Length: 87
Image 1 (cartoon, rainbow, N blue to C red):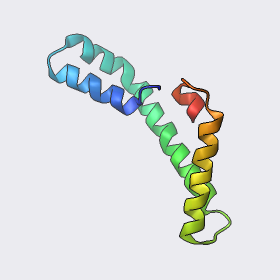
Image 2 (cartoon, one colour):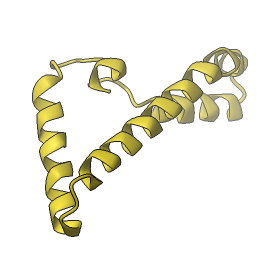
Image 3 (cartoon, helix red, strand yellow):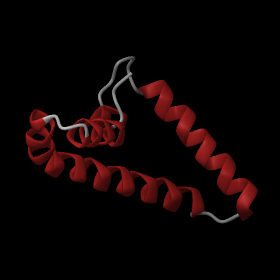
Image 4 (tube, rainbow, N blue to C red):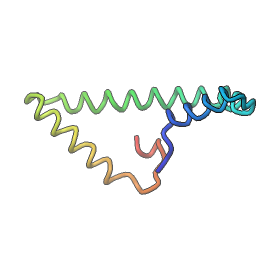
């Protein structure tokens, strides 16, 4: 399982708060990439929502479409796939 970028950020912040000087340097270097991942994840979420909403049919239909999309995505991603492949 690939680490969640948000978890990676939380770990770096905790290390920096604990006084780990290397963590602060890593945080400075990693922050632009972490922000990009957050933007991609938000884009993915919005795309899923838009796809589920198209074709109307009420909230139950929308929920069913999202569930079907999540199952299809899980089947397509290889075990150990990175975050970009999962997107």
